Image (tube, rainbow over the protein chains, first blue to last red):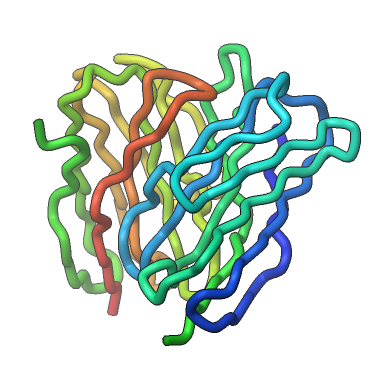
Length: 112
Length: 112
């Protein structure tokens, strides 16, 4: 099994700026998912990108996937204070394996 | 449609006491998971289940047991609580590997 590794560990920006966080992994994947966790709450699913997709949008979120570099990026445009949270990528283990593994995440702080 | 519900939300235990955390989902999901999250850390998988009657060990299974007697419920047991098990516990469920996971609101457990 493998987990994604998010980078940077922490990111602090001003409201209105864009935030970019990255996820790297080691072996081939079928898809990759991004989640958000507000302080003390459960994770919330943001977006899924499949291995045959290079880019996907959802509102102010843009996710890219580069399978040759084994990396994905999550871009949040025009950030808001409410975007302050930790962000995690998840690499599904595939097949009959059921373990859902997360890395340490990127802690984003958006200052008003 | 409640999603994923964890019971209780808060609990204080004395060292050596036992307790069971209940996770219930109403989405007919096959897969269920238990995690713990310590301050400044990501989620660590304790145990998971890929269907009724099945369980498997995750990253940090020692000191915990689980049961999945009914598809909608996943129980996490602590037989003899230790201070090192002070943490926030999250339950999640999903249709399967590579699909969106839904999380409960968490259980804050303190062992004194």
